[in-house]
Image (cartoon, rainbow, N blue to C red; front, side, top):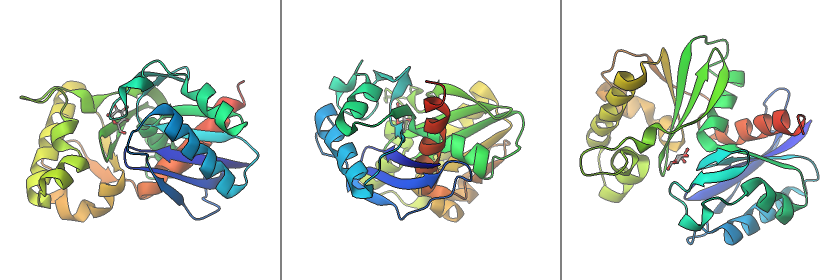
Length: 249
Ligand code: BGC
């Protein structure tokens, strides 16, 4: 079945049609920059434009960069604070006139990676970390998603949340080299290892494509590998997870 997967981030909103059985992307990725306000109405309008671009009439799966509980935003992350308690599923269903399912963006990326990527058949406790505007995390135990793991929210020194210091946005904002940023990211991974001791960490998000440039700064014992679906995992996972959800409705 053809499902439209939409991966929403702090800087871009990206969509593609996905075969929900094989996890294959059937079209090129279409990207619209996230409206600078990062507010609900403006972002819903972009979701509508993405649907129109593909002239899509079927189910839509959205990976959304906040805590999502039963379709509702429970912490706005790096988006506008007015997202708090918005029913994201309803808002996007209304805007598009289509059945929409919404899950956390890192949960979606992890879902794709565990079903179609390097995480396939990986047992035990696996953490997907997406490196972007924030640090997203999706947790899986024996392949099952444990929703809304928010490891990027760990407080660190003067920072309310470590993602403000160690995400890709900090690298960009402060013009850090891969060496400087890689060391920061490693501090984050050290905390993750100490707190939850996973069996495997998989890295996704735009920055993971440059894994070769920063892997030497990662010194934790837990194996760390890049997700070969790279930046497409969010779209594919949103689509696949959506179908899973919509079929339960
Ligand atoms: C949010 C997470 C999200 C991550 C990546 C964080 O600010 O709290 O829910 O997964 O950013 O987008």
